[in-house]
Length: 189
Image (cartoon, rainbow, N blue to C red; front, side, top):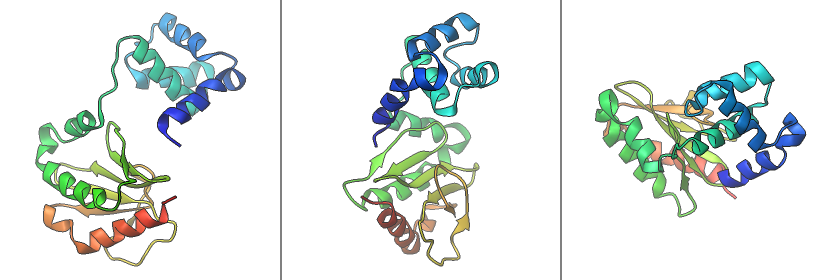
């Protein structure tokens, strides 16, 4: 399911789940005093003041921000933001891991997020995040994890079940490629 399809499903059932339509919630945010451009604060307010479910919080915060002039960054803009400032030196590691993932198939979709970059087939199978100033984490989602000393159990980035710490482009090696290919195969159509 595409992100736009998920948003449409959440929006169409919002009144049933929350008692208000998306537009009514956007108006409530506008008159609340919460900055509609601060999506985190909008979500916190919706949860604390109204008990709005999580998916609805995200949809309302996103729509409120857009109606207030916010424009969602492109995937490349998200990536540029993640690898700027103190983490700029990690960009070559990200690029090497991304090339490895891109070579797996033409059905790989890259999505933009603020703190990590997910890679999706039928569902997310990999995610790359600048974990520290010196390490990039390659998160992989396995149905059945293969044996490898490189794999560490994980709950992030994204929907990962395991991660691999990458400290240099040399760490993006054949074994990492094989493990990533297994995650790709296990999360296909």
